[in-house]
Image 1 (tube, rainbow, N blue to C red):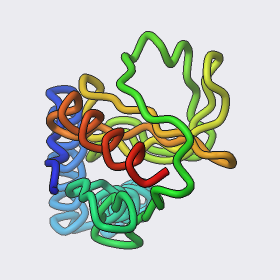
Image 2: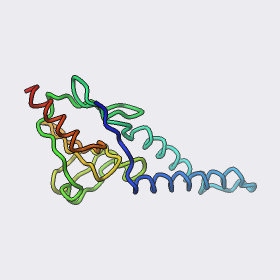
Image 3: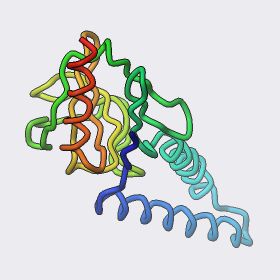
Length: 165
């Protein structure tokens, strides 16, 4: 089964604004006749790779296979095996408590990377929206994802996990 990873309103706005701002800076860089645009060059050196990396690491969809769950991304898909999953449940943004990014991106193509929460501790967040959150816990790691139909996803995954054990 395959579940979509759709961007929420905030992610769409932030992603589009960052891309538009980058394009404006790029146009200014190209049309600079004095060739004194050092600040914009530095800004482009930072922005363009950040946008490309965020786009490549953002989940495209979540797929349930015979072995486990695949978080499909353009680069480096993540596979979580059914045998490793200890607990899986729907959660809300409030249940995460105050989260801080340890190494991640918040808004451009989603909410990606390693975060730390006051409530659940360190976790990997591979979400494209903040509404349909699902917490997956294993013995060694925690993941937060956002499949399009979170309730159906949790029901299906728990059914598979319970019959596998």
